Length: 290
Ligand code: DGL
View (cartoon, rainbow, N blue to C red):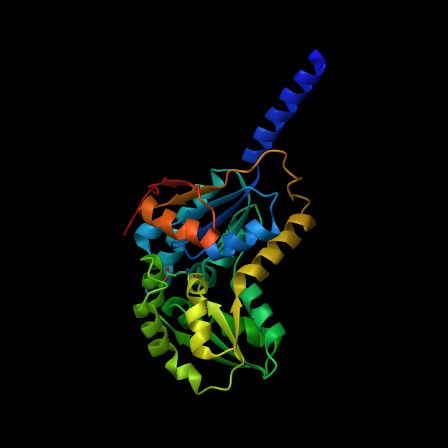
């Protein structure tokens, strides 16, 4: 091999390492829920480096006042902006409902939420024009899904239900337990008498419970996980802004941060993402107010 070839290879390697640190896509959630969106991103956007932050120490966001959720969302956004992200995905319905517009207006990178993509997917799926939404108390109270769906299709019947107990089941890694099954049945009972054929999982934690939810609601009800639709939107925006990553010659090391226990995060994340080794670090957000 020529000396020049070695130099060329080294230069390429250095470029690759630099590229892998530049322009990642950031994801935020109150805990592990946003991993349901990350799972789709790993599938649909294999060239992109992903950086994830879950605010597990302050999860759940669902019962908190909107002002506090907005403040926490800003703290997470600030953390990821320092990591040079080129796009931000608010992979949390509760935060999307109250903070998306404000954050989008104030930061210079594209910001994507999960509510519009989920609403679009539901409208595509429903045959009976009757859609159910389950989410946190904050999301249901905000009526963000109703607003999004009715603005596109005013005749659609929208029924929403808060399921405040689901998030802690997921965060404590009990999604496959008999308690989870019991809780799902108990919480979703009011929806059984409705005529809906489409149910939006309006909290990014809920897809981890989808086998149980599907079994309870029956196969005639289509479950909408906004993750896939959200990542399609991310993909479109990457192309639109001309910022999609080129195919990588080195394998990407995605970064995961949690404000809680990295061990618990690792257990849930590696099972859900089917990845053995994850690069997870505990972080302390600047003014970690509880
Ligand atoms: N995963 C979040 C959502 O989509 C938040 C759940 C919570 O912290 O209450 O709403």
